[in-house]
Image (cartoon, rainbow, N blue to C red):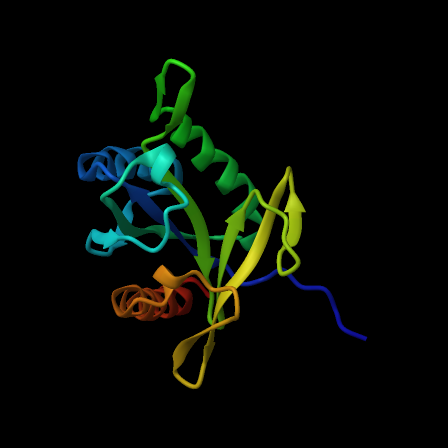
Length: 180
């Protein structure tokens, strides 16, 4: 019989998506106030993966990943998603009957063996966490690199994204050694 134990802390990050590069720096300041100092950030990369966000957010979107210095408990993921949704609400636009976001902020965490994302959408490969939030393992770390699953988002497979996550994993392992 296994013995229940508290999990090791994890490395919190967010994926940012916006057509307004200047919003990234504003959002990063607000995110740092909630989650601690930013300790790693990717470049802003052109994002043209799908038209899913086009009506709401426009064309010419950029993708960026940002992580935060403090390690956190993985059980904080649902609450983190709710907080990021609150931040997104501060960047909504309204034009008559139309409305939308100017930034999408998707939190996740990295641990030794995987990357987990938070979502408000139920799907067969997601597990319910709490408060209307689901968790999805989107990348597995195996044989020295991150490996995709059948449903992994295309932008999480970009070489730049995988490079960011490899560097983030190295940073996490160093922090984990210091914390334990």
